[in-house]
Image: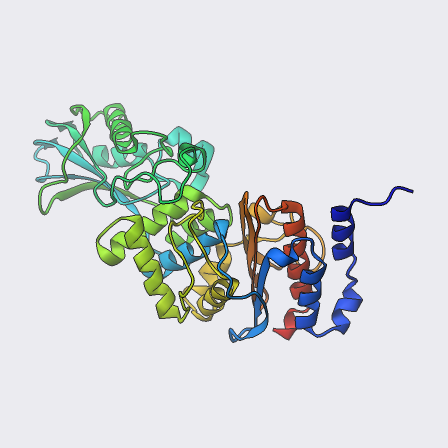
Length: 407
């Protein structure tokens, strides 16, 4: 009989840890046993905390590692804390003065508030479904208010954010392969020129709605104290957090980071977003020593987090009655949805564990909740074996689901 390959043998050994045998060992020993038997165990950091945030077990807990999309957990916590789960991001049409007899004299401005879901109707139906406010709705509302003509142009205003389309540490191909350009004003996840494309989409919608208007262009910000003519709003930030977390949408995460930065500091930049994140971590009592926060999505190879910090962040957020439910809702459910739909489809973790996945060539991560247990498993190695990393993470999650009463 052929002998199994070394990696396959190791994975089989990991999977063969019998639930009865695991149950007979103290939980910390059972976790350490799983790590020791994994072919990537020497490259893993693991922390499990109880419902009070105290450490049950830690393996290389303070080693800074590339978090991949587990970086989004910091972004989501920051957006929920700064903006609030019920806040909405607005896209507005404004003018210098009120319409007179259905006519707006001069230009109008399309002002972006950082909504990643603003779309044309066809794109909204095909891509976002219920989430997206549309150019057609904005135009229809203006027409319904009795406006039939704008004597000037429609100006695109994306000034709430800076004009940097990506983040430090991103590979050039990440735009648009992993994320469209980040802009306070965008439409249909535009791959280039997002603000002007948005203004042109709204102009077309206005013409279809019977409103005469001049061409679209990029222009300076509106005059002081502009008059709002029409507005559409995103789904609540709590729902946007689900897109960023459960579905691991890089673009939504980056937009949320800059929106939180603009709200907290008045500067819609990635650097201000990182500054805001550090403030939220401090507020939650999560030490940031050894951490490198660089972007909102985890695409950057310059990010570094620790299993200790991520698990404590999850535990602290869970203690907050306003933020805890929204954070849990933002995570994928094992075997059910999002990036965990095809993992842990059976066993005690299925439908019970809620967690954020992360994957880059050199990193694999899983952090979340198994009942009251908050856990983080970070694996970093050059060209990490994804199957081995997933097996390690899933084995720990299954164990914690089985023994969640011990948290």
